[in-house]
Length: 424
Image (cartoon, rainbow, N blue to C red):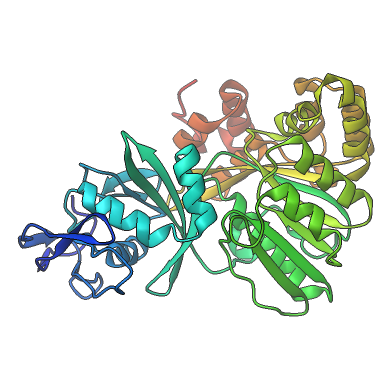
C-alpha cells in the first residue's frame, strides 16, 4: 500500500527471537530486504537494537515500529501473532510498512518488555488482559495487552502532548470547565478511541494554567503527563501506585486535592465516592463508556440498583456540572474531527434527573438548551458541515436522525449548496 512518497528500500537485520522464557533463547530467521512506501529519511529502519540482559531479545523491533506509527500519523498500532502489524490511519486499519508477520516469540518478548509491574503481570495471568503505559523514542503510548488464542496481543495507542481546548476544537461550554468551574462532577463519555482522555487532559491543562490548586489524577494507565504550572499535578497509576480506582479515590480525600480526575467509573463504589467528592466541594472529572448524555445519566443511576436509585438521582442532580459525549468523524482534510454532544445541568435537566427522565426528554432538553451551551450530536455535525470540516455524506452516515438532518442542511444552506445529499 502506498500512502505517499517514492518507495525506498530499508534493510531488516537478522536477529534472534525469544523462546518464551528469559533464560531460553533461540536463533531466529534471517530477515529479507523489504520495500517501504515512504521516504527513507522519514521512517527509521526496523533494525534490532541491543536490549538489557533482563529482556527477551526481539526480532520484531517494537520501538522502531512505534516510532514509525507516529511518523505515519496513525493513532494505534496492532500487534498480533501470525499477522503483520497494522496501524489505524484516519479510522482505517492498514499494514505497517516494512514489517513482517509476528511470531509467538515476538509476542512473548513484547509482553515481557511492556508489562513489567507485578500487579499488571498478575492481572494479565488472572483475567487475560491489562493496560499499561509505555515510552519509546520520545513518544508515550497506552498499551493494552490481551490474550488471543492463547497468545499475547497488543494495541498501542499513541499519546500526544497534553493538548489545549482551542486546538482540539472543544465546544465552548466544555472549554470553560477548565477555567471557570470549581466544584461538581464532569463526565466525558464515548466509545474507545473517541478522545475521552484527550478531552480530560485539555480540561486539566486549562485548570493547571489558571488555578493555584492541587490536581490529582487516577489513571489506568497514565497517558498524558502534566508538568506543574500554577497547580501541583500528582498522577497515580492503577497497578503501580494504587490497587484499584475506588481505593485510590477513597485515599484521595486525605490528600488535600482541589481537582480529582478518575480515569474511568466502572462500579458502584467508584461512582458513589466520586459523587461524594463532588458533594464536598471538589471538582471531579471522570470518563465512562456510554454512547450519549442520556445513557450516561442512566448508567450512573444503574450502578446503585433499584433500591438506591432515588438517592443516586438526588446526588447526581445536585453535583453534575455537565456531560460531554463524543465521537470522531473523518475530516475532509484528513484526520478526524470531534463530534460532541454537550449536556449542561440546568434547572430543567436537574428536574429530569430527579424524576427519572426518559431518553427522549433528555435529548429534547439538549436540543433546546443552546442558551446554556448545550448541543446535540446532529447540531454539532451541522456546524462541522457548515465550516467545511466534514463532508455531507459522512455527516449523514453518522447522524442520529438522518432525515431531520437532511432537512436541516437544506434549511441553513440553500438548495444549491446542499443539492445531491442522499442517504437515510
